[in-house]
Length: 460
Image (cartoon, rainbow, N blue to C red; front, top):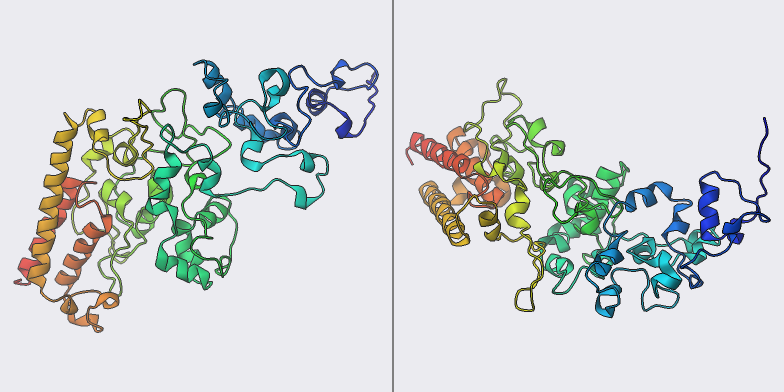
């Protein structure tokens, strides 16, 4: 068999196009290969930025998936609206624009068009010219400020809205434990973005003291990369518009069958992206030290609650009932991530990343005739639930006689009847959900009815 004789040289001596062919398995000869010169359009690629194709020689799988994202064609979106020379826009649609060695134009630095590897990881020349030197490797950061470099301002306020949300900082009392080297493996999966990505996504085993000494500001909260995969389209958004994918790490919508076992209620894989954290930690009505964790949103939405494993048939305190809101295509995102594109200075974009409820989303889906009607319905349900819970607590009297031992209740919990334990669990389950009934109105009303029955049985 005849074989083509290959002449190998230092990769540094090849042009980017030449390296591409070498990686593809095509023989290169310094004498007869015409592609050892700089490709047309990249004559200005002489600074610290080398372009994503160069990165692809070692990171081919990541490069391939990145090619399908809108970041890869970000400059084209400007060209389509004749804004590709607008300096207010081009800096976020190319690599290194305005920086030494960065994008200049298609004619001289075409390889730096779009949002490439070096947009987030920084210039790569020092690394590619000495790949063995770990100190020269481009940084990987989970900080939201990396995305916030571009996703900010009235056109793209994602970072600005997120910065004011609860996801932006690790919960204060949890931070204190992490800083002392405690509770990371029990609380970190939902309160530490770094732990979630390294442990839950990356299957890495971490010690409880991994964040010891880190302040609240130094710890990674629920940043962009926790929910969004920076490198690929995932298909996890059911209704992406304008070619967007949102690159969600988990499905935006899921419809689990209500199941009241502890194993099911705590199984994150059953739930949508929000439910990866916003689900039960497994406490049932027999718990005495603490009530349900303030994270049962996915379970209430699904119409389920954890019941003691000792119950062979796992009969719930109230019958399971799927939420009427489960039919919203985007589920949680419908109300908590309502989006609007920029129209004017008076009507800036909305990214939804404050995660506050916006009833405009309820009207946009057609579920409610108007924003005003949705707002009124929300207020009615929340007032109903709030008033009922207040009345139940008044019937129960001082919490020191019926509350959990952690929170002012009696140390001897054996003095509390099962009826009162069931009633307080349901009260705390509704409060732990935080929506005041909105996530699953009929299911919460059933819980209110059950609480009333338990208190009646106690003659309260």
